Length: 127
Image (cartoon, rainbow, N blue to C red; front, side):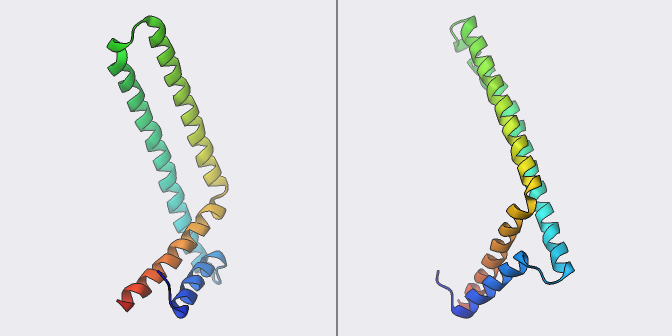
């Protein structure tokens, strides 16, 4: 999709306003949106860990009768525990990085979203 020069300029201006806001109200609006995006990402990480906590025991129980011996069951349980520990640790690290670098991560996302919204609105107006 190629944009007309005035639409492209308007879209870029919308993104630049997010990166370098000129008034406190715009900055507050951007901060609220960044906080909302961070909360959504944090809840998604929590949901993925909860799903993993549900799926791992289910798989272990479903495979219980088909496992040949006690050693296999112990190895599978240990592998599941390691998988769970590493996934929980990685989600905690991910959420921590998101919190620490919130401005760097989400401000650019918001700028791109606003650029896209302006470009789509302009394209819709042309059709």
